[in-house]
Length: 323
Image (cartoon, rainbow, N blue to C red; front, side, top):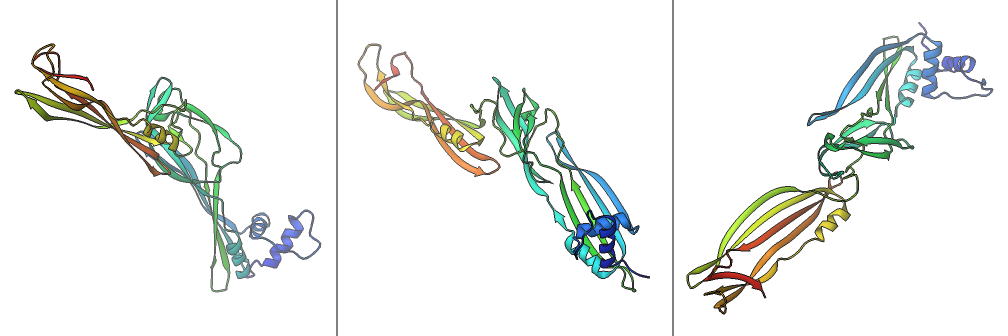
């Protein structure tokens, strides 16, 4: 039995496919060889076709799927040289790993999104389109949504080829596996943003933090004539996440110290102060801003401490006055 040779495929391609027919010697690419086998020979066998749906994100009640189709074709009755030309030259891959965000939680108030929580996930598709498309998403599924013109992925295609000896008579086969990764389909009102970090809000201003802790502490400062002066502090730690550098720097610029007042003990209204000492009053803000990573940007942690004392207008006792 004769096997299909490279020279036979060249002749078939020149006679039945090429336009115009080449007048000089030429070489065929692996893609042209396969095209000729598909068109002029009957030995190509599609051995499998597997369409599937891949869940590229499935969490917090939100789902994003992608169509992935794998097709396997076998070319039989080939001479070894022809099979190896296909295996060596047919491989191609235009796939790219894309990183998106699923903004599964957000606060929507005063026509502004803030307080975003999101996951970052990756999937495989083709290169990003050179043209922009309109994309709209709703952080947390709330509000009016945000629309932007963005560069979206195209379909990706991975082609792999393998040559193998088929029998003792030195007949060969070439098996070609083509996998198509379709770009995710746009869904109206979804929580998925085709970038990371996501657009923070619709107006570009404002941020609402997550309160991490609230703590209260009371401590004795001084006692005069049996009347103690007690200082109470309430500390609140708030974290602002997914910030740009400028947003983090703006928040860091709001750090402030508490005021200093005088606490004074009087035996009666109108009497001269028997004892005076300096105490802190109002709110002190201590802010730490740090870079997290490319996915989550900057985080600013704000610790606000409010100072108060057991003062009033009853005498004898303690009261607060300016220094």
